Image (cartoon, rainbow, N blue to C red; front, side, top):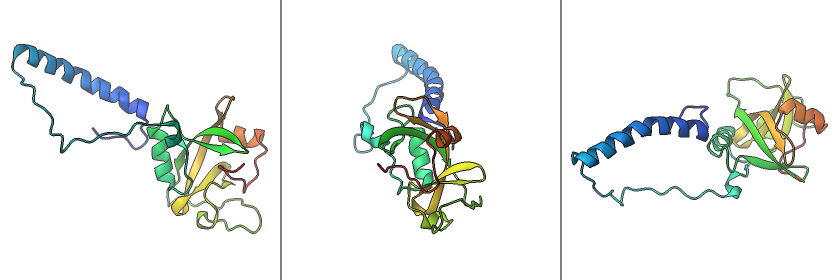
Length: 173
């Protein structure tokens, strides 16, 4: 089963259950009728998924924007993708920016306007949106933020409420 490019873990789980239910019914009928014979799996070819823990959701801004985005999708709803901002834990939602999309960021004086020269985790504003510099000179468009103990808000609402300034970074105290 292919995973859609923007599909989250809960969305995939729904599709898998919808596809799996008829297969399970068919298999159980076949076992009851004796038309299907159980056979053990080949343990040499089996793979084991690791158990997720909360720390798995911590965003490493040195990863590429696509890798971070994939973790956001895969770790929904738990443990979620999170980082810190001004000492508070916050969950983030966003999407990678394509290489073709030109971003002239509004960054503080003295900093280069390219992601290649902005430290990973650094926030900047361009074209009315907020972005985060990621590893491999990639950029994540910030869509929404949920600070601990607060409701989820859009990136703009977060920036306004936090009086966010270009050049501030996630993952810093």
